[in-house]
Image (cartoon, rainbow, N blue to C red; front, side, top):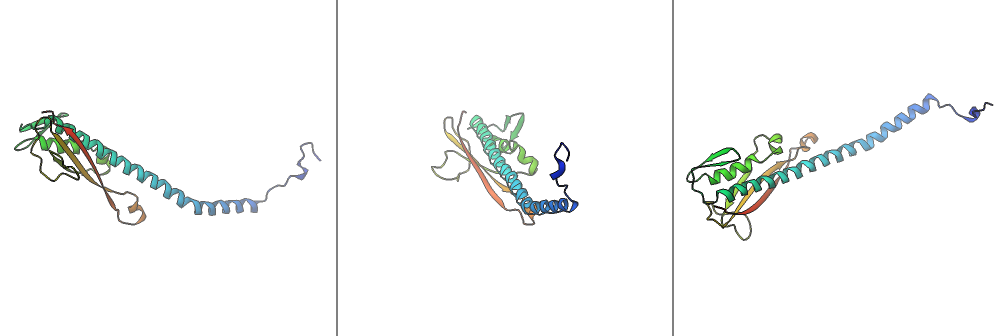
Length: 177
């Protein structure tokens, strides 16, 4: 007997190693798909939350443009280095343009992003804008809304068509002009 106490030690056979490998493969086959599904769901939820936050920010930028331009009847308005033109006023074009310009990461996911933008003054007590925007006198409230249809990205990988969900946001601002 040696000093290291190796007399009682068993040397594993090659059959034991292949059995453990087979067990690991079965465990991975059972747990792997669930792990990947949860990972993809986390990624999809992150993209959905990012889209909602982006639409919220874009609407705030549109409301900022609405507050600055308000009742302006100018044929051209300049915001963030972009000149917007329109008849009889450039203000609605500037509001829509600022919302579309501020879509950030959504442009990367879908380059042809075009959220539906509406604005009204005075805003309704409940619900969405129903009247057309024709300017707002100084001190009046302007409501800017945007609606975007978000397409899920995981479903095409699963072989299904991609469902959509409508994301919307509303911002109110007081006309400064």
